[in-house]
Amino acid sequence: IDSVVQKTGLALLVVLVTAFATWVLTPDLGSPDSALSSDAIGQLSAAMAVGGLGAFALSMVNSFKRVISPALVLAFCALEGVALGAFSKFFDYQYGGGIVIQAVIGTFAAFAGTLAAYRFFDIQVSNKFRMFVMAAVFGMVGLSILELILSAFNAQLGLFGFGGLGIVTALVGLVLGVFMLILDFDFVERGVADGLPERESWRAAFALTVSLVWIYTNLLRLLAIF
Image 1 (cartoon, rainbow, N blue to C red):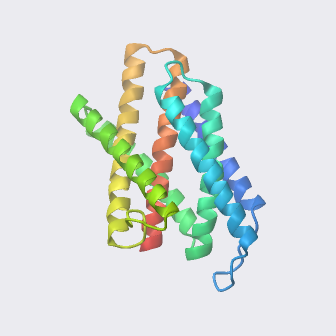
Image 2 (image 1 turned 180 degrees about the vertical axis):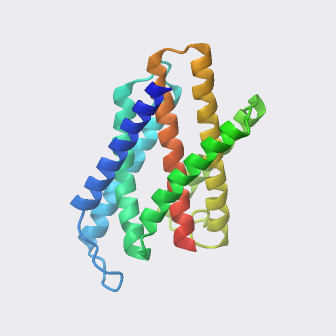
């Protein structure tokens, strides 16, 4: 458990450092009343695209790799941080009001609340629940890819917009993120009980980082909508 805590702390530190660096190194967006420059939009879009696609590719590799690679986990965290830094900066420019800080605090509150509920209520994870969560995660990922493809042809379903459908998908995504945390806690608990190699703590750290990023992005969207 100590190893999982240390590895997860390191993974989140990499995400935060690269996100902060991306925020600082990309052009200042100015005030919401001023027009965005094409250079600023281009750099933010490039950071989100490169970071997001790179992190997605590495997340697939890390998810199905038989022997977890610490270097690939940290590379995923770095790319995820680049995407989150640009993503958060745009939302901060668009909506302000400390929305990014609120989302960060809310994310860690969700983590603490889920961990407390998992321990206090002694939640047991069944195979059916595990399969349901994994199917829902891949379903959300599939919808995200579909929306991305449609947007390239100027046609969107509005699943991740700011209308009623966007609220529903953000709420579903938030709940799904909490379910993902429960699976992560169960993996750690079973790993300790089964005597998994210490190296597997990197897999747990990767999973926890993915879940926290998932919760953060959906919470940020909800705050923006509200």
